[in-house]
Image 1 (cartoon, rainbow, N blue to C red):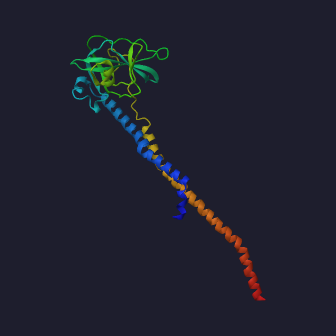
Image 2: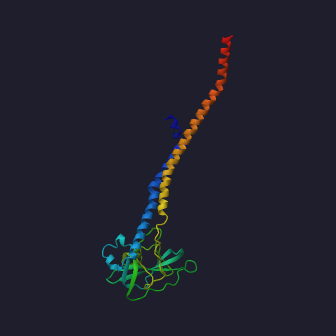
Image 3: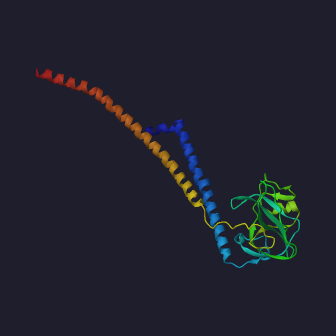
Length: 274
């Protein structure tokens, strides 16, 4: 145990705490964060893939309860009703195909009385970040093919505001937009497919690949394992150097004493022979 007393020095204690904290973070935060993102991405891709093979269902069927079940996300739906005039809401700071865009939300009154947000698509800003002219949604009863989506949620620091004659938001969040517009909106929204009444630039579906999240998660797990192993290697190296230094010191002492001892023995033997 005395050989390990050097580990109680402040430098070694600090290093051990840093390594333990890093490994703990890898196993409890960083790796689960990436692995959860991978699981969510795979789940989303599975839903989109499944929806490709399913027939659209009336959106009212999914709204009969407390909103769509989690497995209905990205499901194809048909909506019958009419757009509410002069009620467009713009979503700021969007990127579509790696270029800035505004997404245009318009409330849609379903047959039967419910009102749901419809993401009509995107428009590109002009002269930097100015809002362009936005075509009005058609009047009268229309039928829409779309995909049902869940509200995105909000952040306290990103509040809605009015600019360029439009109410503008940072997130597609039906409860927030309902509070701003005074409309009773369902807590979902519809993302239009291509070639739909009132449609603008079509927002493409996410690419159906899992991304790098799995490899990132495995890398953080590997880092969490390697950090303690690295600390163990440094401890072993220190012990080896200390053992080597001690051995070298012992050999040096023996070398210094050896010539004197040998000559004394020879002198003694010579004296006896005489």
